Length: 123
Image: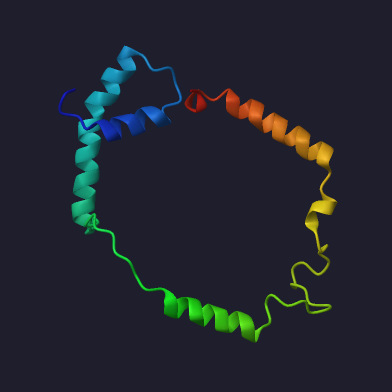
């Protein structure tokens, strides 16, 4: 197992949903070399280009100016009486007024309990 890269191994174990035993570790580590070779060969055949690893900064000033000009032309941030999206003809000015806080609190509580039981969220 010494010739297996640790990142793919960690990613495989992280996504594994069953109980991790020594037998599971041995099986996954044996198959990982073959899987990595298949992926590498597919990338070569498909012409996948690996990123250089260098970060480049692109100048987005022209794009921002174009967007701002379009927003100004349609008066996007101005209040226009009667204006609405065709899919949402009746939308409250503040959508938080429509939320039932009791239901929201119950939903959040249920989701927190559900996620607290997941093994990959453990500390």
